[in-house]
Image (cartoon, rainbow, N blue to C red; front, top):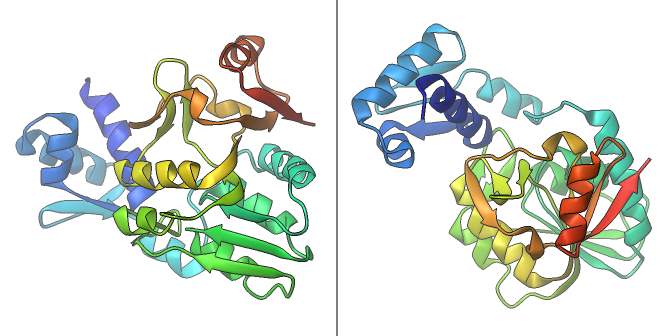
Length: 254
């Protein structure tokens, strides 16, 4: 992997996790700790991160958490369309899982005012958004806190879903690749996503068209793990064919 590409991936990881250790980055990218330190020096020089002993953290992560804002706020028009379409598949009496992420946050906004709904989530911003809604019961997982995504992750978050059975999961992703499948920047999230899928009767992947054909650092697995994908009308025909070939129903929000 070229140094510039590796540094881009390091930034992706920090945007997801908030911080990282040199030792762990060296293992992930299969390079020496000296190489990682050089990468971090370059990223700090570029004003993107702040180095600390044994690792680094994202420069603006503290301000972001204090403002309770998510890192990924691009393409919000597409995400809002997708969120509106999701309402067609959520009914009174449902128990649903809402994954963390900017698209699922838009879904949560649309749920305000609904009655007799149970929402299980690993996203603290979603929990606070819906927690005061009189018609919605909110259940939050445990786990390790990830500042940039305002979410809970890791094995403790995954263990929460053991023995649960819910009607629907609305799952986020960072990238969708024919070769790599569903991908995410953070390895710690993979075990949580798998546990969510196992607990849900039906899985809806919510992803805007810019995620198509992209691969993040860690793969969750094949596209066949999901039942439906809800996306916007910017999706290309070649990507539509991929979902058709994998027997996944494509739902276009427009």
